[in-house]
Amino acid sequence: MAQAHRLPSGSWRVLAFDEGHRKSFTAETKRQAEYLALQWLTERKEKRDPINRTVADMMDRYIEERTNILSPTTTSNYRRIQRLYFKDIQGKKVAELSASDVQMEVNKMAATLSPKTIRNAVGFLQSACDIRFKLTLPKKEKHIYQTPGVQGIKTILGQTKDTNIEVPVLLALWCGLRLSEIRGLRFDHVFPDRIVIDQAVVDVDGVPTIKGTKTKESTRIVEITPWLYDRIMREKVNGSEYVTTMTGRAIYARFRKLTDNACRFHDLRHANASVMMMLGIPDNVAMERNGWETESIYKKTYAQVASESRRESAQKLNIFFQSLVN
Image (tube, rainbow, N blue to C red; front, side, top):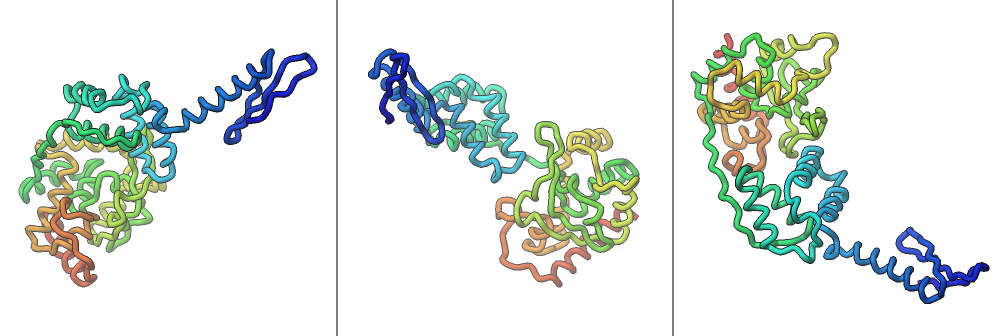
């Protein structure tokens, strides 16, 4: 640390430096000035040590250090967790945090939140603070999907025909697109025989935001028929760039209003997978077509998909759906 220097006034002054920051300390005696400077340097060093930082500080740092790596949706979700949960422990230093503290927060959250939400929140907290407490978390929920069968698919197609969500429904059912991929589909990526999926649109804090596809396998080409191409292109008016400009919430709401089916909009993608299984389309071809990457999502991952097999499978799928819309 720099030594104190006596000023013309008789006071003593120390100029302290720490990682690009500097601060001046003045006191009546040399010892007092140097003590103040040392105290400031010690406090700054302690704050840099993760164990001496608060939970809120660690959350901020975790997000800020990954700003260019995390997707906008993930960043928004982390900020939401920070804003809504763990309020009673965010002011604590990580060194003072105990498993009991976190368990109490989990217990409070369990009264109103789903097991998945709680697990995501705890995962963020433990990663941000670099802690690994043994906690009792709510059991995972078993989801029972209301996947429509052939008659259900035909009913949904009839109920949404010539509406503003007919194309989103067709893209989900026929092509297996996720809602975010449907919202991110541009007209210049739609061709008479195929569509190219290479981006998605999600809502981040209520603002539509462009992002990459969910996984590297999600960037893909899906073969379509001329009929589907023509139906998609009917949506292009006044030089519009995107196939749909509706928000995800609006599409969900419109879908529930128009259909009397118990399924969710995302279940249309599950229905697409069911049809591919029914038609005997190879698992690896189905996985490539819908952009899945893990066994838990579909069945099994294969190394390579032959283009001829992909074309034959696309033809089977297109013939099936074409028969339902004619």
